[in-house]
Amino acid sequence: MTGMQQSRAPAASGLVDRIAAVPAVARALSWAEHQEHAFADETAHIAAIPAPNFGEQERAAYTAARFRDLGLSAVEIDQAGNVYGLIPGAGRAAVAFLAHMDTVFAADVSHHVTRKQGRMFGPGVGDNAAGLAGMIGAVAALNAGGAAPSRPVWFVATVGEEGLGNLRGASAAADRLGGDVDAMIAVEGSFFGRLSHTGVGSRRLEVTCRAPGGHSWHDFGKPSAVHVIARIASAITDLSVPTEPRTTYNIGRIDGGIGVNVIAEEARLLLDMRSISAPALDDLTARARAAISDAAGHGAACEVREVGFRPAGALDPEHNLAMVCAAVLRRLHVMPQYAPASTDANVPLSRGIPAVTLGVTRGGGAHTRAEWIETAPLVRGVQQLVLVTMALAHG
Figure 1 (tube, rainbow, N blue to C red):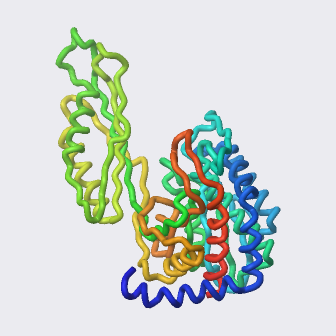
Figure 2 (figure 1 turned 135 degrees about the vertical axis):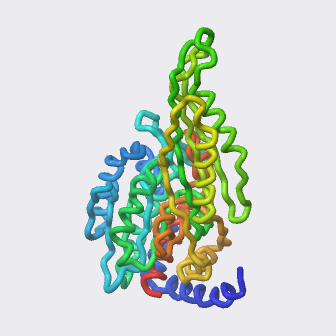
């Protein structure tokens, strides 16, 4: 913690302590203390609804119904597929919570959830069924305690956070709410205790090469799309990247050709590049494109297409939003862990809107069918959202 953070931390902690002592807030926190099973049930129900990228409609319909059940105002599903709900209040909205609905799993994958010894297992249970359930749980806790924020608070279930969704839901939410809200908070299922105020940017390129092809014996020497893609991959892996700001690349997939004795007519690769610095990401992208151009040719026509983009951005850790969130975690006896992340918060951060990412429980195996979470931390994860809501709406 910097000297400025240390000087401001008591003020943020004092605010959170005062908010926690408000009778209605205390009742909300006490109610949440006894709702582990209810929060887990909500998580399991959401996780059981398939929600692949571009296929979130069923989960959105369920979320909209839950928002209405909880008495939120202005509940609607926008053209992007996001679900909105509002706790009304006076003046400019204090905060918008964003929890993404989509998962990395196709609809035909079994979404069965199992429970054992305080853990839940299932595809997407942590990323991001628990995050969405935590956001819903926070609204329920506020209702149970009769805690009414004095300023408006938005709750948004977003689409398109995973994979090549390119944060289209968060972008739509920022377009709609960004000018009328003081802060945005991305709610993720796992990593309770992590306070991310830096968004990791990314660019994804698809490189496709096409060549005449032919028979491996009779047409030996003719251009092969696979050979050209291999040259391009080698050129990319020769690129150097800075460690500060941290910048990375990965060729996640290569495919092409139809047989071992066939000179390939077509081949492609997918390249992922990431950095916490927008200029560093732009520089790597330019160098990658140059390396691809230099290695291409050899009788094959190559096309480069950008298939994914996530903007980078960062919030000053001494900003009031970060200080309040850190004070809330400490109030719950959790030491904040600062680490960059790639979430819905990237969009507001890139636009100069104060934003952070918070988790609501702990788990592992994200993006695998063996994904799991612990259910006990859901209680403090929800209490965290309650305190942040009330502190930002009254502070």
